[in-house]
Image 1 (spheres, chains in turn yellow, brown):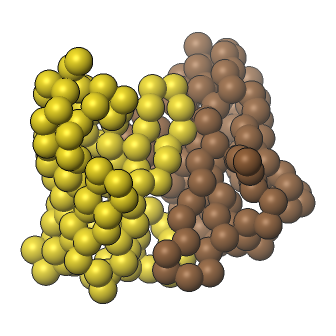
Image 2 (cartoon, rainbow over the protein chains, first blue to last red; image 1 turned 180 degrees about the vertical axis):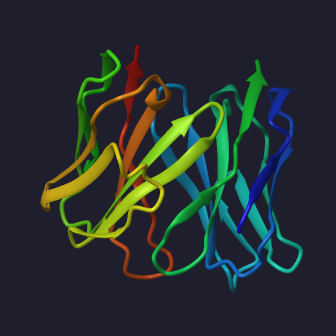
Length: 112
Length: 115
């Protein structure tokens, strides 16, 4: 059974720092991996989707990497801003039915 | 700006009452998902539909939960009878799942409190 773990559970850093959020999964036979952002009291917004054949995806200050063989993904946030404060969730997709298996999330606080 | 809408946004009810949550997926999307989020369990997939047909509802307690898509513009999740342990935020998401880069779009959620 696939299990997704995110470390750390919470992170607080000063504005301007570069930071890395980690996601690991136990079954490397994934279809895709996706990073989401969740703001308090709101739904989830997709940030980056990495296909199993890809190594990384970039969007603005965000870069997500994928190492299937080791069962790991990282989300790199450059030059963090207070507006980046949110919970970041990692989810793996096991097949083309697109069922997401979720990590518990990392709650990120960026201090001005 | 197309969005997934959910109603109600908040619901407080007493144990034993029936609860119905509604979702309007983005027009043209062929897949609808229902998730539940709690502090203890995180996000869990309850059920999902493709072209209005249920594909998987194994995440749902069958004795009290039911999910339907009466038409392409409406998905419902019903709990009868509700219990305090059902208190959670219920999210609906929709997507046009055709290729491997398609994503899901989430609604704002229904926060359910069962007393």
